[in-house]
Image: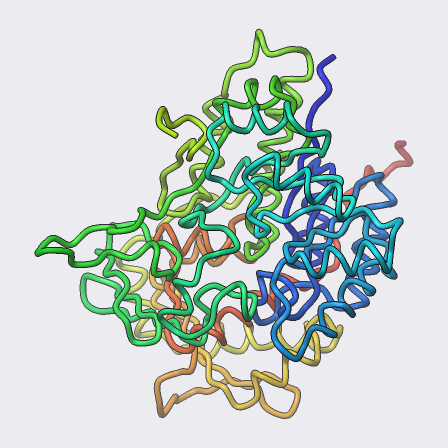
Length: 335
Length: 152
């Protein structure tokens, strides 16, 4: 038997958490209902009661709950983030996912026994950065930004004893993780500040005959024909006119999907595979969790007989943003 | 996967919509509102978020049946609006199968939105709130159909 990496799935609500657990997630990640996490959208996330119930549910079935506090404390309000860290410990989270160095330091000193993970927003792409976080803050796992090739991920794993978690499925953004301010350029708010990229109050979908226009704080982001798939209303996924041509000047709406290279990901010793999408509904969580669980289980007996089933790809393609999937940086030939 | 409960993607024939537009709109509006108020009665919807819905007007339009329902939320209850006098704050439009897939939690609204099977217009933040509010509801489990005669 090959030892499998943990399947880490998103939960924006209690039904989503249960969907993840019931469909085979080894761990779920979630956040408080405020701007201490990067999916701070109206009605999403957990209050004290649903958080406690969610953790109870997961623990009763032997699964872990990872609590994301992955935004950066804002001036004058550092106490709110400290309170979130204390709250995560109190509620019994198995690990806290942190991005800010100051918070890592706070958590380490105030709660030395608490398991800490370095968030993808911490933007650590080298083993030096990861080993620093291990030495200084006792970080046990790091989530790698989606910019590294598989060979680079392998190099990181060879040079650290920190567990490595990588993304396996979900919407892609420009991958300037923890450092992206594009949303602020359009509306003055971004994930690092308010916990939301392109907050909904700035988004307008305008249905016109034959097309739908998306605007972010008045800026025209895209115009979709009736038969074109739509994407999230973010600047990075807009089509813009550049020197007389209109096209996806930054990137096309697309989803990461690693099913094809899952055997390689296992081989290099990745400890956990993460699914993006705390903003999505329980239906998405169930579909994606079920599919990746099946793929991982198919690898349990060894990779020789592993093949990607068309049904898995169809299930994942359906829920993908932009209706297309990519291996992202994992397989690019250049570095 | 339990395929017995799967809602297929379908589209009602064109004449249904043509006919539906000439039928009274109140029966399905009342049914929808009865459902929403039942959810209120069972305290399935969180009080904090409900306050945001106060006096907002909503419209749900079923494209292939030609039916639509307009309603509002006031003083702790959902109420039908039979003759809307203004554009709603938030409007959803989709074919019947998409709505059924959403209700059955079989498809995710983002998926349907990306695939252009669900239209959301109006106040986007209100739309997101409503979506997340419905996602967070723990619907009572459907009754289990056990064997009638003492089977184990």
